[in-house]
Length: 295
Ligand SMILES: Cc1cc2nc3c(=O)[nH]c(=O)nc-3n(C[C@H](O)[C@H](O)[C@H](O)COP(=O)(O)OP(=O)(O)OC[C@H]3O[C@@H](n4cnc5c(N)ncnc54)[C@H](O)[C@@H]3O)c2cc1C
Picture (tube, rainbow, N blue to C red):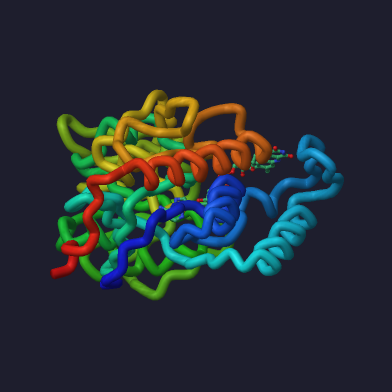
């Protein structure tokens, strides 16, 4: 556990998170910019970016320019996937498995997952989870269905297989490879989660039912309200004011996670506004006495 309290933790490696981190660097704040990959996976997929001022090219070229700036301006990036954000004793606690970070304020810039199973939110905490390490132990000798978004998450599926009796894996990529014998890959996609009160299984898009005690979505972005308890959302997006503040004091949000349009310029602009608002928040907030957080 890091015995350090950052001024700000920026969660999300996309353009919203990067722009916030760049501004915080200029404000000379002590910040942690944390994410799965710098600049986010989506940027690398854009075939042609037509709406970013003064830029012509594809996502890979834009990422190269951003990386150059990141190096020149010395903006540090920490690779980690945060699995929970909690308000704790006058600051925020961010968990990443057994690792813990603390910060006086947070900018949430985790983007959106476009592909989701509609009924998943109904069963949150009742069989649906986004974090193998957090909830896997609840499924000892049980049956789990998991949706594995990329090769990066095969390890989490293996972790679940070490606990559960059987794991059915819907892999969203080609050439999935698992060592555990109790993982069975399943073709197709999950259409619906079913169960009375709690999960009893899933129905696939081709109409097959698989009985299961739990469903895990192993992917980068969990819905924001899952990541941060008590965070107000509307239709899956974080509710923000014009200064990017949320209903939780000290927690701001920026980028796709706050809603449409899903565009780089909007995400970058909101990242900047969030950084200014955090700066203001830290200057005016007198109640954060950090000296005694780790007596
Ligand atoms: C194929 C494609 C083409 C596009 N083309 C364009 C275009 O031409 N022009 C345009 O303006 N927009 C385009 N977009 C939209 C654009 O990509 C998004 O609007 C932009 O990436 C949003 O930035 P963001 O920082 O809010 O989120 P993202 O770029 O999604 O970044 C969020 C990051 O947070 C990380 N993350 C999520 N949860 C966690 C966690 N718990 N812990 C740590 N990290 C986490 C994710 O891994 C991700 O890297 C395109 C999108 C796609 C998919």
